[in-house]
Structure formats: structure tokens, C-alpha cells
Amino acid sequence: MRLPPTQAAVLEAASATEARTIERLAEELGEKPETVTGAAFALEEEGLLEVTERTVEGVSLTEEGEEYVERGLPEQRLYEAALELGADEEPVSMGEVIGRSGLEGNEVDIALSNYARKGYGEIDSGELSAVPGNEEDREADALALIEAGEPVTDEEVLDALARRELIDRRESTIRSATLTEAGVTALMEGVEESETVGQLTPEMLTGGEWRDVEFAAYNVEADAADVTGGKEHILRQTANRVKDVLVGMGFEEMEGPHADAEFWINDCLFMPQDHPARTHWDQFALSNPEEIDELPAELVERVKSAHLEGVGEDGDGYHSPWTEEVARGVDLRGHTTSLSMRYLSGEAVGELEPPQRYFSVEKVYRNDTLDPTHLLEFFQIEGWVMAEELSVRDLMGTFTEFYERFGITDLQFKPHYNPYTEPSFELFGHHPETGELIEIGNSGMFRPEVLEPLGVECDVMAWGLALERLLMLMYGFEDIRDVHGTLADLELLRETEVIR
Ligand code: PHE
Image (cartoon, rainbow, N blue to C red; front, side, top):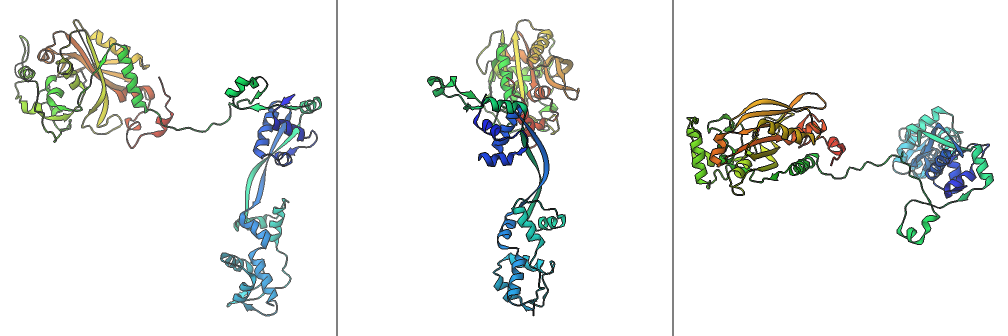
């Protein structure tokens, strides 16, 4: 039989009639106990050794304990000095005895506090007396026994030594190995050392050495170290996945400013200028710059007219004031539908001929109250499709296809109202942990009051979906703050499986 060197050595050092401790085998072989333990377990697995375990209370000397074994306990040394100075006859000044003993620093305190306790003598008004015949010290004897590896049974003494921190008492496991019958047979038939190799090298391959070596087996059950290296945040990872999916569905990506004119954020979307969502209760206004100077003049006129008079034969406007000044005000975008307006109007990449599909996965900002499902900023998955004939079925079909890619197959649609779409739908999905229906997006078909001023003559279906809500459905966390900001759940971020 061929065995790796340590295993072969351990097998040979083990006995069939006597259980030998790992410690002893290690000492005999000049190996570390851990190495011998590993080899013994490997041999046990092969059926060649039997390894038994028992727990014992182990006692070992602390560094201080070891020092006292060598030099005597401080109180013993004080006692000896006292005897030398005749303190058994007549009390001697403490200073003199201490000087004689050679005790230093806190050894003096230790000596004095144990001296009377152990009946070595009395300490009284700066003088020390000694009781003769006290050369024996149970604590010192016990320390010597422990040093020699002999058992100490006097619990009282052990407790005293532990209190003085001269010994460590702890449970330890003692493992012993005995040869099994198969082990004996293997030894009789002859055990040879094989060379085990942990890693295959290019040299072994080119030299042909790999043919003769024995490879060390992997212990796949061994505990591995936790590696918490950096990795892509699940939100970023999912944003990238969403982009890949949309590109795969034939969409192109939009980009544009985070801080933009209200014109693009609200006016183009037929949001009346006195709409409650346009107050600072909902949106963040910039003070620098406060306004955007340049807006496309013709488009401004058409948008203004839509607001004041409406579009089409039966069109009707809002009958409320509309000023370009308000439209030029700069806000952090509360949705990325501002980008859709820039693209649909031709402002971003020029006139677009149907069919077209565009998307963005970008940040938006809202003056919300922070709670488990709301942050002041989040990522919106914006998108729109422009084509000659579109219906709500196209919209629903697109969502079904999109969410299926993320394992979400139980979408629900609820009729909704947006100033800029008709009809409009909110999207809901079930939270995988709580079963609750949560809103994951908003959508609809842009109405003529939006499209006509933009110069778009066909149908456009559009949406804004919340990336963080999608993430909730995918990973099952319940608080959006688990993934963002100071309350982020690092455990969740570390342990969430990377999905590609
Ligand atoms: N802007 C809407 C929101 O933020 C989403 C949306 C975009 C709805 C386009 C309809 C059309 O909720």
C-alpha cells in the first residue's frame, strides 16, 4: 500500500494493543499535533486506524506560574529571607526582609498579601515575624506537579492557583489512535511512502512526473474561510441586467440631464402649472441655476397652446395661467419621462421615424417621506415604444415579457390616472416574502395633448418602473433602506447570490 509520508509514519507509530495519544505520536514523529491529527483522520477514513476522543480538563501553567516554578512563589521567597534574618525569633523590619528577598515590583505586594493568609507569619506595624517549620507549600508543590505533567487532585489548591492566574484550566479533547485489523494487515503487507502533490505544475506536465505522483485529495467538507471581497452592488448589477434585457428587446438607451427645465419634466407632459405635484412639496428646485435660458421656441409655443387651448377639434385646455418663466425653472427630475420628451421632440437626437424603442435606467429625485418603500432618490426604468398602431395589449405584453426575464410572472394591472397618458395603468407584483401586492410601475399611452406639440403623429406607449421595487421582488428584502445608505444590510448585500 502506498500512503502519503505522514500517514505512513503515523500508521507505523500506532499500536494495535494500546491507544496512543496524538500528542505522543506527534512527539515521537517530530511532527506538529495538527499534522498528525489530519493524518490520523485520513487513516481512519481508510479504515486503517480507529480514532477515539475524550474530553479532559487540562491544566497548564501561565507564564507567571512557570516563573514561580523556577524561582519560588513570592511569599516563599519572603519567608526564606525572613528566616535568614531571624524573624522566627524576633520580628524584623519589613524593608530589611524585602531587600534581602530580592523581590521586585508587584512581587512584593503578591508576597505580602499571601504571607499571612498561608500562615507564614504576621505582618504588624512595619515588622514581619515568621512561624518556623513552613517550608512546605501546597501551591508551590501543585505548580511543580503541573509542570511535570502529573495530575493534581486537590481542587482547593487548583482553585487558588486559578484565582492567582498561575494556571489555565480548560477542557480539551484528547484523541488517541489504535490500529485496526486492516491497519495491521496493511503494515504486514508493507506500506510505502507516496509523494502527494497539492498542485499540478507546468514542470510536472512537461517532465511527465505527473504520471507517478499521487495527488492529495480535496477535503470538500472542510470549512472554508469567508471571503467578503468587493463585488458589484446588487442594485447596479440589476440595473445592468435590465439594460441588457431591454437592449435584447430592441431598445436604444436615452441619456440626459439630472437637473432639467420644468418644461421637459412637466410642461411637455401636459402637467398644468398649478398641479400640486409641481410644488416644492414634491420636487426639488435648484437655486443655481434657477432658470434655463434656452428652450426650443416653437415647441414652447405649441406646448403653451396645448395647455391653454387643448389640441384637436374637441380639445380644451386647462383654463389656468401658463408662463414660460415657470417652464424655465430648474428642478431635479422627479421622473426620467423628461428624457422621453427630449427624445420624442427631436431635441436629443433629431426627428425620429416610427417604429422606435427607447429606454433609460437612471436616477430620479422626489421629495418623499422616507419609509420602507420610499427614498428621496431612486432608479427609474423609463421606456417608450413609438409605432403606427399600438394598444394596451402591446403595453401589457411588453411588461409581461420584460418581467418574465426576472422571474416575475404574476403581474397585475390597475387603471390609473396621469395627466399625460390615457389610458394609464399601474403595475403590481407580489412580494415573495410577505405576499403583499406592491406597486412596481406606472404606464400608459401618451395622449394627443402630449404628442401633438412634440410633432409625433403615431402612437406612443410609455412607462416608468421602479428599479428598487423590482429588486425587492427579486431578492425578497422588505425595506428599501436595506440596499441603500447608512442603514444598508451588509449581510444581505454580501450574501445575495450574483445572478447573470
Ligand atoms: N412618469 C411616470 C412616473 O414617474 C411613469 C410614466 C412614464 C407613466 C411614462 C406613463 C408614461 O410614475
